[in-house]
Amino acid sequence: MIFEKRSYTTLFGVIEYCYFEKLDDYPNGLLVEMGSLIETKYRGQGHYKEMMRHLLSLFPEGTVFQIPICNKRIVPMFERIGMKRVDKIEFWGSPSNCVLLEGILGKEDLDLM
Image (cartoon, rainbow, N blue to C red; front, side):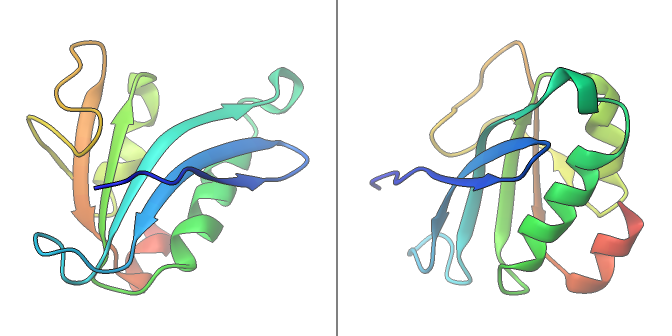
């Protein structure tokens, strides 16, 4: 699996990710968040949530979404859309400093973020 990192950039910050349209283990596609940064002056204002909601809406329903989260305060946001804690994710493996989440994208779930 070759990771081609892409970026979703706005005035508020950037979310880096890799997307694979079809893989044997992920026939509906795989989206892996590679990192994000919200500019300091925009933190705590909901911009990351809006950026993530928009980014996730760009991918087909049924896509597997995996994300390593170092900021444990945002874990509930992803659990509200049905993501579950897992032991490892693609590319990242099992880093000990993150909460690893995986879920299946559903457009109706994005309003729950």
